[in-house]
Image 1 (cartoon, rainbow, N blue to C red):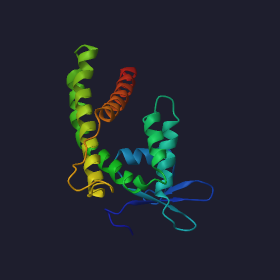
Image 2: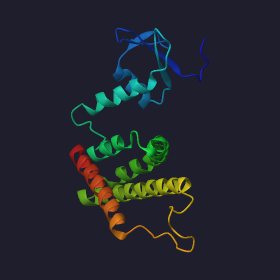
Image 3: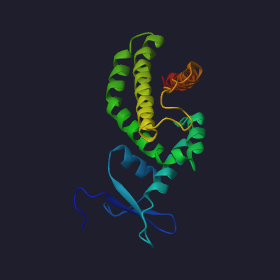
Image 4: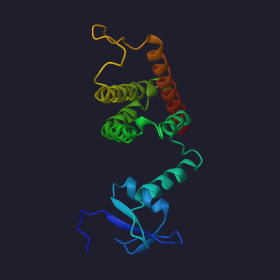
Length: 197
């Protein structure tokens, strides 16, 4: 018998059916998505081999949700960037960065919701200013966190530099490009919020 705090075991059978051992019922991917939203911990195991297949099943849930009309949450530039990290030396850092970013965002989501609630009754432009500023601030903090993580992996100056020469700061154009990309992503999010109103 599983302990109360242990994750629920979902068994996936060869016929692709999912069985919740906690409730002794068959479930769907939509049911698993609801469990995630409720904060219920579960693992998915191959019923025949016992292998943990939680990752591919969660990925499948995201794929299904992204294919529903009006459900797209992952912007194309983000997907392209994510794909480009596969096989790259940065691949080992990306999961940790994304996980920490989502944890930070989750901690801030209640504040975002309160700001959205407080924004009702204002003009549409005013409604978007406060949450967008908070989102811009969160994005800035995430970029800073990523830059700090990168510094941990590059503690020495690049080869070929003499010790007396200080590292040159990034060019203003590079910073501007990053800022423009972030602004474009925020604008896309704003458009999506506008359509939800």
